[in-house]
Image 1 (tube, one colour):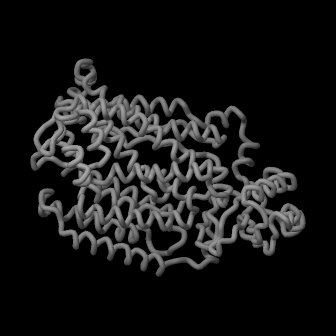
Image 2 (image 1 turned 60 degrees about the vertical axis):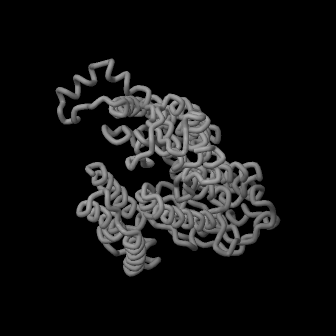
Image 3 (image 1 turned 180 degrees about the horizontal axis):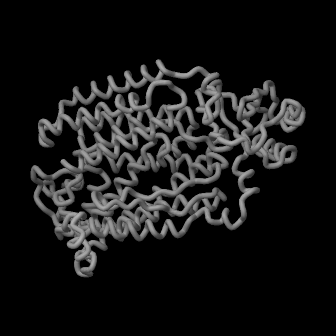
Length: 506
């Protein structure tokens, strides 16, 4: 119960920051009011749990209606207070509308925008046989060139980018996007990063990765995950606020060693996942930080790890490769760890306590992939009435599957959102993301464990930042890999069909 309310608190904080960052500058409606409307379903669910207890779930109709009313009310309040385009342009951080490209915010006039007197030079950068410019729009922080594409998108972008650099040096970033009319257009935005690098000593530029911070977070996360691993291994720990007893545990190697299998297994999975992103970004010469772990002294011992991209992604091919590299790398490590952990887990009988997130009595049929791997590891020991008392390494492996599935959800700025964006383009990816959120919400009506996940995704923005060349499509091989990634998501989150269960004899 205490964990649930702590989670609601963290969800509320994340939702507030998300609303403040995404819509505060394009609507006059108070952020706190929009936040309260978005959090209404979660607060209603918390109130129900507080009154009736966790054993009595709320009616599905109550959840559906609260989400529907919350969504409609949020949209109404947002539109009611929406600023006019003129007001929006006066903000220091303008937001992109549907008819405008997604442009990185600029807070300092470090690079002067193009002057109207330079229009002839600009037009000369667009050969009529490559891209015939029909209209040039001057915006406060961008120049938009609209016209007709007369050659392959990849060739056009590369040639015009070369011409722009020859005329204007590194003053601008060139963005290539598709409009609502399916006609691609070019956008020139001031290259703030290049201007800053010219004024920044090389030594400070090389400090981007901040290895000291990365190592400190790595060490702290190893401690917190080890402590959680000790509890998973069956050793009771004193509360963290009892400092004396807590440090006695830390100084006891025999106790700590029991937590290392879980800690090292989970951190290996998360670390390899982020290294997949990091090394692929380096391959495409995208500036990024080292992986940063997030330690917490409860729950799983960590909220995961992340890297930060510090330079634009050049094209959809790079966006796809960087995005899919993390889940694939993490999954490749997860499978052998999970199989080993399952082989060393105990088979117990299914009881009322057998739930998806109960490592002491886990029903493997909650997931198609988990059921197949469990049967592979345990063979005839696993029957239709069997549940699993997971070994700590198996717990880490199972969490690795959950992390892989969460990242592969095709929504917004999750890895799966980047993947479908690279495969189908920005607009289609937003439609796919909305469908995915609705389907997960429907699945949550059958599997209540997905409800919190569905609520989080419901509040996550669908829009994704574009690549510089966001028009050139992927090759067939990458499209196949993207479809396989979505298939992997499905076999992780869907329960085992009875026909397959009969075949596996479980």
